[in-house]
Image 1 (cartoon, helix red, strand yellow):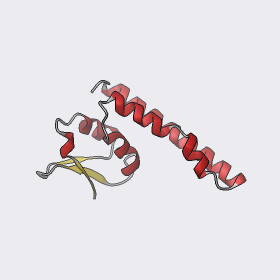
Image 2: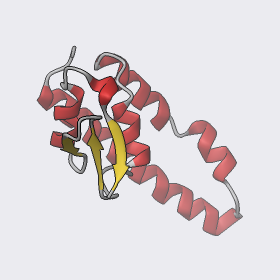
Image 3: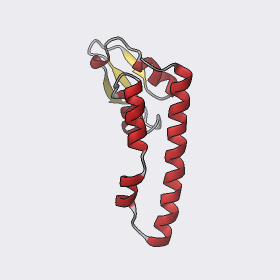
Image 4: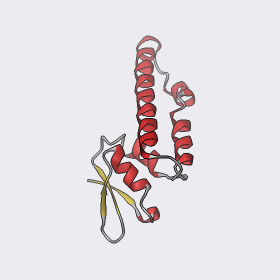
Length: 112
């Protein structure tokens, strides 16, 4: 891990706030001019910010998994090892624990 926890948490909160502002903007544009999803997907930059943070955290796939598959903790998800050990996946603190797990390739996302 090349980034400390407070910096990581602040970075994730900043990305999420940026995404939320963009979503609101796209909703406003959609109401005025109609479909803009294809345009929005090309310019939002959230994917690039997540990829950059993944690189800073040792190229972990869990950041994108948290943002997209667990929808920023909205979905009731957990990560489970083959041996049955479970890790919650609802908060940024949960994500931090997972990012520091010594054998992350064992972890699989499970919808509860």
